[in-house]
Amino acid sequence: MVYEEPGTLAVQASGLAKHYRGRAGTVEAVRGVDLRVTAGEVFGFLGPNGAGKSTTVRMLTTLMTITAGTARVAGLDVAHDPDGVRRRIGVALQEAGLDPRQTGRELLALQARLFGSTRAEAATRAQELLVLLELEDAADRRIKGYSGGMKRRLDLASALVHEPEVLFLDEPTTGLDPASRLTVWDEVRRINGRGTTVFLTTQYLEEADQLCDRIAIIDAGRIVRQGTPAELKAGLRERRGLAVDPTLDEVFLDATGRTRERVAGEVQEVTA
Amino acid sequence: MTTVQQANLLGGRALREGLRTPESLAPTLFIPVFFLVVNFGQAGRIFPSSTTDFLYGQTYAAFQLPSSLLLAASFGSAALYLVEDIEGGYFDKLRASPVSRSALVIGRLLAEGVKGVVITAVLLVIALPFGVSVASGVVGVVLLLVLTALWGVVFGGFMQLIALKSRSAAATNAGGLVFFPLLFLTPNFVPRELLTRPMEIAATLNPVTYVMEALRSLILQDPQWDVLTRGFGIVGVLGVIMVALNVRLVRSYD
Image (cartoon, rainbow over all chains, first blue to last red; front, side, top):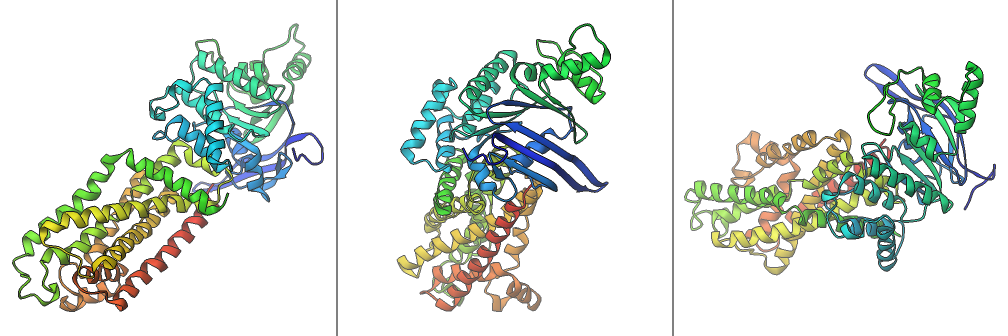
């Protein structure tokens, strides 16, 4: 690990901003975000649609230029050493980034080789990951025939080929059925258990509550709450004088001023 | 891992992609063969080989073959696959990897070059029953394969630019239609000196003309090095420009 000052930070952002020039003028998608994610934790990044979650992740993962501010990931400056950052991170974005014409095994082996593995090493690593994520039976089938859950697991596997120090997961369970969602949760816990820092964006508050050591809530491009789930709940309980701890949903709604609608099933979704 | 090794890996993947969608190759072969057959059928008797000097003793199909080769090399399917990668998120997966930005661009273009060689070879075989032979011999066949493939790389680079800029299959497809006017503003049916003055000026300004004339010289005559130098020079310069513009666009891609 190459973490520099302040020692154990896996992700550090200061005044991070992204502005676009559109036809209607300048859009401020992210407006001065400060983040400090400690190495080894699962950090949840929550927010309603369009709040700036994915834009922030894309800046942190070198996929998008930074308009203002600075970001360091795994100890390296994202703007000045993007290739160094890319070697140390794994990325699974909202849209499972897969090539439907390759087989699962081919995709993983190619990804491993692009990270510098030899052909033999890449084949071994691909096999390990296929077993680990229970995709062995489908390994030599083309990805276009995979189910949504299988695609998500393969995407996760492809983000792990080089054993990254920091894993970015952008809404990894969106669109999955409850069983697949639980499988992904188990994987996230297992990956984190092996020392990988996980930076997770999600709209599912139960997911954040279950998985994350600390969370930040972003709204309209600004961080509006940050802390452990327990701290955030206790803060709202104190402020409102509640008899019992509120749920994370209530914390979220308080922070963003959104309305709530319950979605059928075991997971609650909050929409703007 | 060097940029060349990365480009080879990505080129291999692009070739696999092409092999697994053989249906996308059908129009690449069918339409150029269709033009060859129709143009030869319509004008073959107007330009009999015995009395037409510019055919050097071959049939009119030999004169027409370069148009078909250029058309086949200008389908730019690589750019449409790139749009799929962009829309499906795989392009971002590659961009988030420590892959040289040049390799991201060159990988697909390498595959386009290999496809160009194969398609040219197939078209040469298809042209045999029409009385076509390559007068410049084995060296000429090799140069023919290389020049057509390089043109495929140039045009693939142009299509990739549209794909990267528009991120849209519809816009990329529409961009490909640019080639049709370029193909017809050439000495497509007769040599340049027989064109009307306005057409001759247009053909002289059109870079495709020089590639076509180089291909045609290889089929009809012994190697004409001045003509070949112009043809290879055009694809060389355009190729460098296309790769440079593609790399620049990928580097600033948000």
